[in-house]
Length: 360
Image 1 (tube, rainbow, N blue to C red):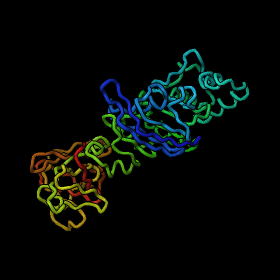
Image 2 (spheres, helix red, strand yellow; image 1 turned 45 degrees about the vertical axis):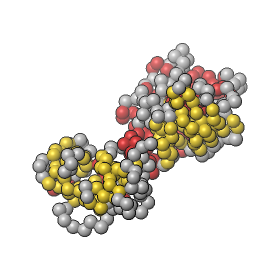
Image 3 (spheres, rainbow, N blue to C red; image 1 turned 120 degrees about the vertical axis):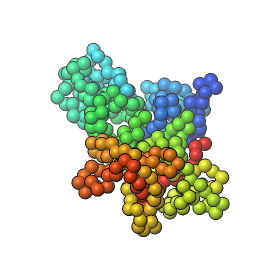
Image 4 (cartoon, rainbow, N blue to C red; image 1 turned 135 degrees about the horizontal axis):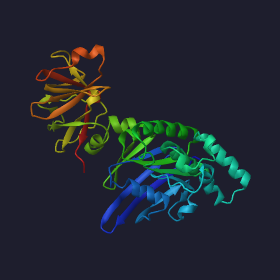
């Protein structure tokens, strides 16, 4: 089901502690939005307000044009998938998925039709009579998902729903959930602290920290054009170099003029600014050559670490700060791997040179 969600001026205080600070968020019909942030950031509190488990101090949540906050949890039309799945151990797979339909007093034929369709959607049709304690972690996760979507909720909420799975299965389920969402088009809000998970699954990501919404954008924009140092640091690996801004607005690092993309934000001279460098965006450049499109920094190679799919080269700048860059370990790049103590030049294209301000 496709419904829009509009959150306005949402606040939640626990005594003097502000868990949510004036959250404003618009989720498009059928959109998959991830609430991303560190532990204690407020993302789970926001999800619990949506679900009806926590009452906000003030604000409004409209779903499909209706005020949500005046309705009790069971009247909100919301499907929930919890971190521990919350399956009923005394029921088999069919009975677990059928439960939301039974409490809504649907007919036996309608229940059977919907449960079969939901289990087919999550590829568990052959497990209808299986006890849940005989299922793998991934299968239990699918049962919980089928139970959440079987009554066709207006919005689907998922709270750290993949965190109990091992790394390989978790990555597989991320793709499966993404494909399932593309088929269902249910408006979905997903909570995680895993940056790669958010980037993989989301249409847009809401980065939350200290109860405040820091940035709400597509995964590519969040990663390539973060608005603050916190976002750049939290989403992906990043090295920060201090940037000097002169009175004319020109930026420099280590005394070298900084070349930036046309869309790059340029803070005022008095503001603290940083150049955020991603290791996969960096290259070991030539000792000389055209620099019109790149920013080039002199460094000394310190060590090279083999990590399977990449070689991590650790280098040091003149001020003593370290930086890591990645080289794909293929034959064509063999000559690029420096030895410890070797002077190198680190190049980053101006379009990959991210300028961020200090966080408020």
